Image (cartoon, rainbow, N blue to C red; front, side, top):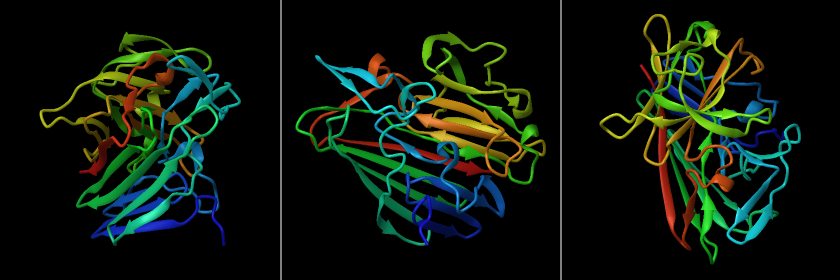
Length: 299
């Protein structure tokens, strides 16, 4: 029977398990020691709120879908009618090809083909590999166009500690600044974090409502940015971002299936409107490859 999210790919390494979906190459579920770290959703439902999906060649939004590509004005298809934006890239609903698969790892591939508003051919790959305490993710983008292709990438994992009331979890994001947004969730300015947006010391999820992009991220000595979700008993989920992931979106919702409250922590190489602002946008030369890494740990 066909599934709204395509083939389901189970992974296992000891007491760590994951489920990857073919559509959107999304991280659908992750458990460590029997504890949900990425919350699941019903098998017969489409992916809710981009849960775990790869967002490429841009994350977040492009205002009215319109952007300036050198001397050419381009218009992307409007994929967020509510706010009249082009949202979350071009592979969100694509069924990726399964290139390699083992018990504890899988590689999926999909090409961004030339289309309305984006006349470039870009090969993409994502590899999920289980670790002893979570998962590592590697993305590669290769430009097969005959001219430089503008690209950015994000992903949209929801996090939890499944046996804890999510309202009691404390979210920490090591960011100095955030993007102010208008009524269409598009950036209108960047400001230092303040009382309502400062997550450096942690905030209880039940006390905040977030759909906020953060920047000026602190990197640890090993070069990783680490955002954490911590339970009252000290257990912790860590989302770590490698080089190139210089932004992170924090998003809370009471509409995630089966969850009283859900929080996404989204590593991104660029913020909303990057195709217009150029912030975080990278132009890949012909046949150039860009490799990016992020991961999740539970302790």
